[in-house]
Length: 183
Image (cartoon, rainbow, N blue to C red; front, side, top):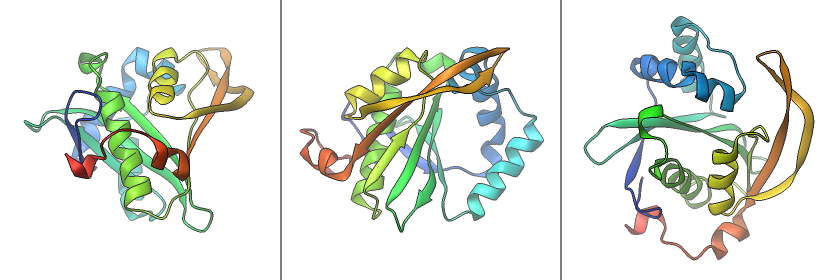
């Protein structure tokens, strides 16, 4: 799927075990590790996680690609529950490509996939409350702030609150933007 909704064009390609080094580098970068509120994991653990996710019907992971095939990030629909119609969105953008609109473009494509191709009704995102860039991108993509899970994340010796945001299918349907399949 492709998006030009947020000015840059990106596509999603299924994540493969061969992409583990990229994902490892992106998630280990200090700013990303802090904003994702996790500690870096060994490359072997990332490979094993990708293998498990490929076999897991409740998780779809993707590389975010520029039109020339350059990978600029990763996105996922995680914790999919088709009975309830819910999933969690996850996104990381390479530090060399942040601030260019790729995160928003990737989020638009991911949301279009979730609501346009899958029987999902609710998407949620759970960034920590200090992750201003994620909160801004999510709000611009139509996500609504629902609340805060207080002191829900421990990273670098500190506790962080986690913001809870969601987007429902009817809200997505009401968004005035092109869908990724229309471009």
